[in-house]
Length: 534
Ligand code: F6P
Image 1 (cartoon, rainbow, N blue to C red):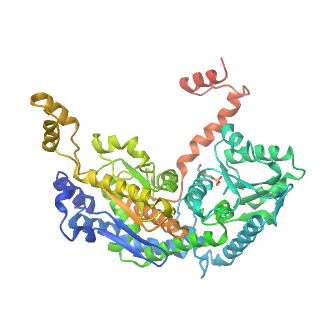
Image 2: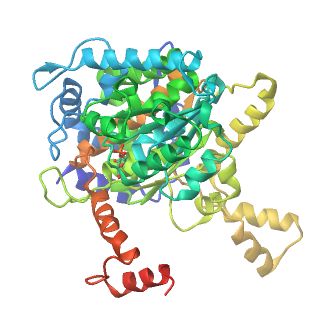
């Protein structure tokens, strides 16, 4: 019998048990883990799941290969085997020491680029780098996917630390996006950052051209108000961006893991190099925890095992990420790329079909807003949706501490309600108290039953500082890594995005009437005709 078989057998045996019945005096402590670093204490509580000591022991035995693979990743080994690349985003946030790729220490170049980013950010923020009309008031970051989602998420998350120019993001090729962002901006005091690892992504390059035309309407040397972050120096030069405003990185930084380096420049411009460094320090702190904490107390490992239990063992197909932290409103979108582009695969590293489901659908919204939208389904729908709550003990608004307490109460109430539910008996009593009797009492009571026994985890932290944000993001990155290792897949490629890109390129001439739709299916041909107004 494999460990997977044993896990399935165990899950089958305990699936109808009330999670609430597992709680004795020790459970909350035993089924939780903490980091205790100076910058930010963090608590991961997974006691409100159906994982018991036997399940945890089995899950931990699945993680046997994780440590060797983890050490290989940190050492610069080419663990991204389908692209022949190392995976070293961790080096971007721990700039001391040395790491070799192909026999060469990559750290001196990383440190030099980081220092150039800091100088540039200080010059922009200090008014020494100017536009035609004076100090930079607005920065427009043009990028998509990993060159957008992380910086957008972090800029919103770190709003209390934002003391630099206003930062705007354009990602969608839909002209409405760039139109609405540029509208109202002063060309003469705007800096445009083109953020693209490859500098070929059609959305980004199209928006970059649009921004350049927009800038040229008023600015005599538009290229002087452009900067680029990319691995493709020759392409940024061809676009006309001077090398001193190009911040490069290497192909061993995956797009969705890249916000720690030059792709984070917009964030650094917003909050300043010191706060950005605190963000990096938080990420490095989580790296140290991941590398040194025993597996049974290791937050990324435990979060991954809970994910595996719910997705691959229990068969729950989605997981909801529910930050009770308004400033993490884009965390679910960021995690959709991080988790689903990394672990949404169908074959194992060796090309064989996966024997288990790959990663679940990740979705979510901040609380309390979600409570007034989709929590109905989470509480009373027929599908079980494991929920991941995130919650700060403190807000940044001391004069609104009473609102923060209300936020905390709501978050804790939701995980308690999911756990506890409400029985038919209690619902009947409620209806009886309203004077209902007989079949009508029963009918009304049934609508008010909450099955409960619905699993959730809570990640609690003191306050959403730059350091803590770094910890949270690195925690999720490593969780994805651990899940990928256990499932045997490569979390660092994304071949599944290619086909759509190829077909879109081929469809463009068809839409423009320069090619016919021969070979296209009837549906696509009909839609093309409709779009062309025929
Ligand atoms: O289409 C997917 C993707 O390749 C992502 O992996 C990446 O983050 C995004 O596109 C943007 O790519 P680039 O930074 O090269 O423009």
